[in-house]
Image: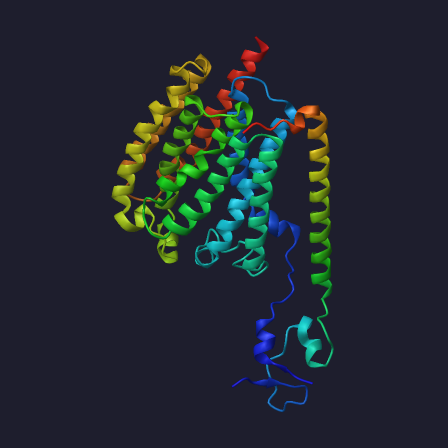
Amino acid sequence: MTKSVAMNDTKKPAPLPPSIAGLAAGETGIKLTEQQLRARRARSIAIAVSLGLLVVLFYIVTLVKGPGVMDRPL
Amino acid sequence: MSVTLAQAERRVEPSIAGVGDYIELMKPRVMSLVVFTALVGLVVAPGHIHPVIGFTALICIAVGAGAAGALNMWYDADIDARMARTAGRPIPVGRLQPGDALAFGLTLAGFSVVVLGLLVNVVAAALLAGTIGFYVLVYTMWLKRRTPQNIVIGGAAGALPPMIGWAAATGGVSLEPVVLFLLIFFWTPPHFWALSLYRTEDYARAGIPMLPVVAGAEETRRQILLYTLLLAPLGLTPWLLGYAGLSYGIVALATGAIMIVMACRVRGERQGHRASKQMFAFSILYLFLLFAMLLVDKMASWAA
C-alpha cells in the first residue's frame, strides 16, 4: 500500500528534497535550487560552445578540402 | 493535495553535475595517452595529411576515447564505489546520475565516429567504432568481471589508437601500425599487473578477478616477467623493420633492458611492493619514450 505524504500528515514523514517539496504544497512542476540552476547553466554553455566548435570545424574542413569535400570513395 | 512517497522517490533530483564532472567521466589521463599514441601513428605514417585533417582526426579519437571512458564508468559504477582508487568518481559519489553518463557516452561515441567518417575517412571511423565497442562490450561488460585475462584481451582496445591514427593518415592499415598495436598490447599486462599487485585487496573487495586475486601474487610476478621478456624484443621491432632510426633502437634497447631488470626485481620481491610500484611507474615512461622516439625520428627525417 502506498503511503501518502500530505501537508497535514500527523505522522511527520521524511522531508522531501527541496526541488520537489513544492509539489506537496500544491505547486506544479519543480523548483530548482540555486546550485542546480548554476550547474544547468554551466552545462548549457558547455553544450553551446561544443556545438559552435563543431560548426567551425566543419566550416574549416570544407575550406581545406575544397571541391574534394564531396569526393567520398568507399 | 498530496504527493505519494512512491511518486516522490521515483523522481530523481535535478542534476548538480558541473562541466568538470563530465570531463572527469571522460578519463582525461587515459585520453591523453590515447591521443599521444594516435598522434604518433598519424605522424609516422607515410604520405602527407593536411594539419587540419590530422587535428580533426585526433579530436575525434580523443572524444571517442572519452566516450568509452564514460560508458565504462556508467557500467562499472557499482564496483567503482567499492574501490578506494575509484570511489571518488562522479557517479559513485552521487554528483552524476548513471543514466546521464550513459546518454553522454553514447552521444560522444556517435558524434566522434560519424565526424571522423565524414571529415577524415571511413577506415579510421570503423576502427574507432570497433575500439569503443571492444572496450565497452568486450572488456567492460564481458571480460572484466569474469576472467583474470580481462586486461590481456581488453588491452587490445588501448592498443588500437596508433592504428586509427595511421588509418586516418593513409586510409588503410599495414604491418607498421600492427607492430605499434602489438607493442601496447604486450605492454598492458605487465603494466596493470604491477599495479594490481599492490591493489589486490581493492580488486578483491570489488569482486574483480585480477590475476593476483585469482592466481596469487607469485603467479602474477611470473607472468609479469614472461610478458616483459616478450615486450622488450618487440620494442626493437620498429628499428629492425627499418621504419625507426638508430636513436630509437638505442632507447628501445636500454629501456627494454631496464624493464626486464625491474620485472626480475618484482619476481624476486617477497616483502612490500616497492619493486611493483617502481615497475608500474617506469612502464608508463617506457611506453612514452618509445613512442616519443618514433616521433623524434620522423621529425628528424623531415628536417633532413
